[in-house]
Image 1 (cartoon, rainbow, N blue to C red):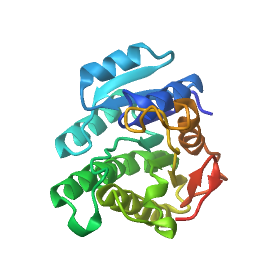
Image 2 (cartoon, rainbow, N blue to C red):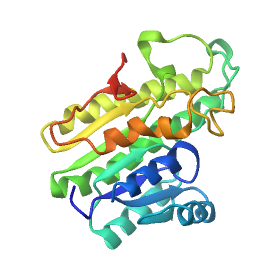
Image 3 (tube, one colour):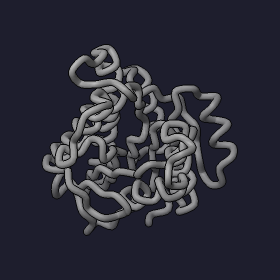
Length: 231
């Protein structure tokens, strides 16, 4: 790996995002830890070893995303890895037949359009060097092949994120930019809860693997535990 690889992780101040930051920094990456609350991001970064920089990032805010992209370009001159980890699960117990559409809009904005915003500012920076890794942190709940009822906003937003993964990977094929979706599994985080079966280290493993793929690595895939899973 080149010594100056730069990675941006959204939602990096806690849970899986923070662990992704920790593992990438341990591999020698310069890590930009994006957090809606910059002070919380700063405290998280201070607890991590390596070259970790906390920055304010609200993926639902165009100005916040643009400001961060400009600062990365100015400070580091490049961006090699984007991990779209920020997201919300806001409709547990809801049903599609009578869903709260305001919650659906909120989930789409955070989980799909927010990631899309970041992709649109990251890809031009990656194209300059003919290298990039985009990792969309998705969920098996967004897989059409096993789609069921409940949590409609979350499911639809993650299915949309999977579709975006396929679109971008197709359009960027051959450019040196690999785009993949990953399912971290049911992880012990604020979102996953204490009953979850997987420690955060395991949840971060596949996202970090996808973020550090060799040039011969896959693109346009959906992975859990580093293995392909059905869309």
